[in-house]
Length: 279
Ligand SMILES: Cc1cc2nc3c(=O)[nH]c(=O)nc-3n(C[C@H](O)[C@H](O)[C@H](O)COP(=O)(O)OP(=O)(O)OC[C@H]3O[C@@H](n4cnc5c(N)ncnc54)[C@H](O)[C@@H]3O)c2cc1C
Image 1 (cartoon, rainbow, N blue to C red):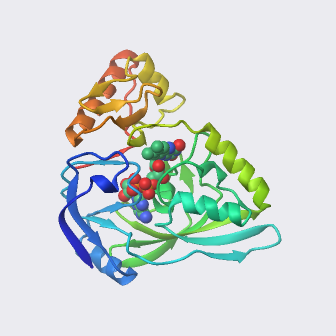
Image 2: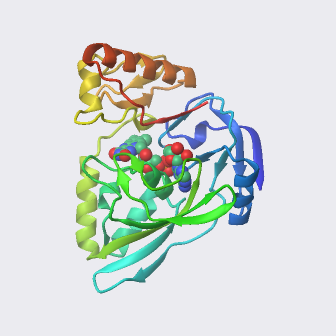
C-alpha cells in the first residue's frame, strides 16, 4: 500500500480548493484495501472528486486509483445483459462503452463527471432520473469484509446499505440491448441539455428540498453570483458552486453558510448540502 502523507488534494477534486490536504492511501490490491478498512475504520473514500470540497482532512483518505479490473458483460436473455463494472470506472468511458456496445439504461449520465461508485452512492442523475432498476447488485468492503447488497435508491441516496464508511468495489448493472445508433442519439440529447460551466466546479451545492428547487430558492434569496473570495455561486445557475480562481476551503464554507442563512431568512427553508465538505 502506498501512502502520501500531507498530500495536496486539490488536483484530485474538480473544484480545486487551493489548500486541500490529507493523508492519502493507495491500495494496490483488493487485499490491501480490505486490510486498510480494518486498520483505519473511520476513513473517507475518494472517487472522481467531483462532489467533494476539502480543507485539511483529519480522517485518512483512500483512493482506488491503483486498483485494476475490467468490466464483464453477460447475456441475461434476448433483451438484457448484466455488466459488472469496477466502481472506479469513470462515467465518460462507461458511456463510450455503452454506446459502442448498444447498451441502454444509463444514457442520462452523459456529461456528468465522476466514477460509477460515486454516482451509485449518491444516486447521481439529472432531474427525474435514477440508478434504481439499473443496479442489480453491489460488492463492497466494510471493516475487513467483502459483502454484497441489492440496493434501492432515493433522491441522491442509496438505500439498504450499512452506515458509512463502506467502499463500493463493483456494481452489476442490468442494461437493455439496443442499437449503437439509438443509444448514441439519446446520449447526444442528454449532452445537449447540459449547462456548460467554464470554471472548476463541484456541481450543485445543495440538494433540492422536497417539492422545491434549491436553484430557485437561492435565486429568489439573492444568491446568484454570491461570492466569498473566489468561491462563488455561478451567475447562470444559483445552485452551481464554482471556483473563480484561487478559492480556499474556508471560502467555500463561508459561501455555503451565507447562502443557507439567506434562504432560511427569505423562505424559512433550511437547505442541505449535496456537496460533501471534508475537514
Ligand atoms: C460539472 C458538474 C456537473 C454535475 N452534474 C451532476 C448532475 O447533473 N447530477 C448529479 O446528481 N450530480 C452531478 N454532479 C455531481 C457529481 O458529478 C456526482 O455526484 C458524481 O457521481 C460523484 O462521483 P465521484 O466519483 O466524483 O464521487 P466523489 O466526489 O469522489 O465522492 C462523492 C461521495 O461519494 C463517495 N464515494 C465515491 N466513490 C465511492 C465508492 N466507490 N464507494 C463508497 N463511496 C464512494 C465519497 O466518499 C463521497 O462521500 C456534477 C458535478 C460537476 C462537477
